[in-house]
Image (cartoon, rainbow, N blue to C red):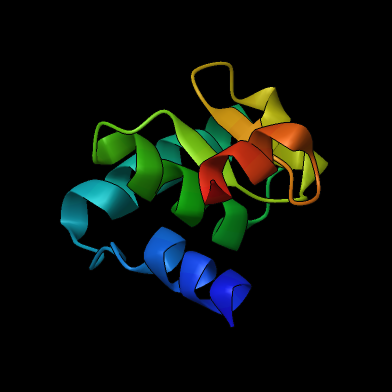
Length: 82
């Protein structure tokens, strides 16, 4: 139950998507041909919100230099959960 609560805390600040996010997604999609549209949207939203990290096991996101990809199951991920 404690782990479920930690995930809820981690995912609680979900963000609504708007035009600035979509424009950033399009730029990322064009600049990173290895990204699919959904990954570009996730990354674009993170960056547009002024954040610098995303939790994902998708290695394609690591091609975005300004974005730290935190892989579930790693010590960095465990640190986030406390």
